[in-house]
Length: 596
Image (cartoon, rainbow, N blue to C red; front, side, top):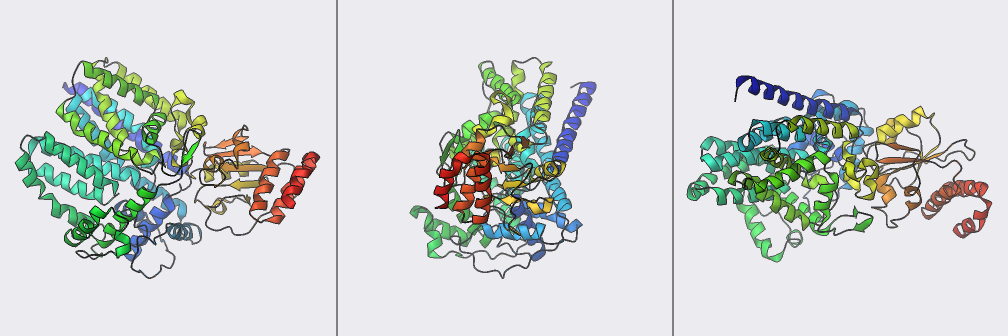
């Protein structure tokens, strides 16, 4: 490559990675804690303070430890912790971790804003080595110009930025997995010890980040075995990585967890298929893996087996749909990423798929099939790894596309990013109407993960602090942001300090509801808020909270009154029934039915 061209490519890459950091950092400042963050973050801080890992055992500790290092820079206090007891995987309940996180961030004198910025920023930084590796991988497979396409699609991807700056286990595990798989690919080609050691260390970090990495580890090594020309050498050398993996996983537990025993009660093992029960007990005895790591594998298995409330195209399910993830992948992808991937697929007619491409395409396909069999249809974050591989594959588009199109691709990618900035979680394909139509397709962490409480509070204060009724799906504390409100099915708020009843005669009154609640995903009566979904909102806070002016809306007050009545809150119900009756006397018969 000519020196001038190489220097120009280098500047492009610096600019794109800088854009990734700037956009990610700015979006951090505008978002409240998303649903799972307060548990992961609080647990990470507790791990540092106590060196005990009984909290949040459903995920390994590494990423929580990385975020929890933010507590080193502030005087952070933690709530009193219960004495560690023998964890039974059947009795573990997540709500206790939410309560602990709520106390740490909202009931103590900790610098919550600074803590969240630092913890999220540490997560965001993991994207830099991943971006560099993807760029290098693309360059090795498709050339230096193609590496700019891959890097641009990654650094400007709303889906990547949505989760890269959150304190969860999703993005970090993807980062370690892809970097580890890159060095495994190099080892498959070279059989050099240096590549094996780097790959092993990174696989250890991936396995200490999220249990899904166990599947990644298996399919990538299986693929590498079939593609390697010297299979015996590959097998022999791979045995060297076993002690490295065990060492790193134990290191992430500070070597405090016991190893090498049967840690399970008979009832716990019963959750596994019968054929695997004895094998799992045997594995726990010989693997030298930490007790809490092995317990976490069982908890993760139970969660996946029994499913989770899910929403897709207006339908609801606990067990999910086989087509959920492929469809979600399409509706959540940007136009430009789908376009470049489509061009790359067409280019196969000109140049066949190479062995180097099969190394990442085969595992990506196997993982997709694996997730299609999963009962956990709660968010594209669980298939986040597919996007970096999609961006890598998109580099092949230059086989049939002129290089002058690179600038156009970068411009379109940047435009699609800025359209949704900073509301990255709520990104939807612009051809489907974008984020404003997202509630029609998907819910939960695909759109509304409780991340816009800060924006709601800012709007409320700018509006003059009018009477507000709130139905919030999230774990950020509204009181922390200064909100005063009537609580209407905000059942994820760990503690309501006092029951607020808005005054009977108000000039203006608003109802704010999280989209997940409007969709009714976690309510027994799914259509409880369907009336509001059909109305045009007065205001949308980051696409995840809809605000309705109900000042003169008798039907809205009737619905809210009926909800309070079912919750056995007569004072609140009576206020809204009176308001509805005053606005529409014809509602008298309906209200009397509720009263009786």
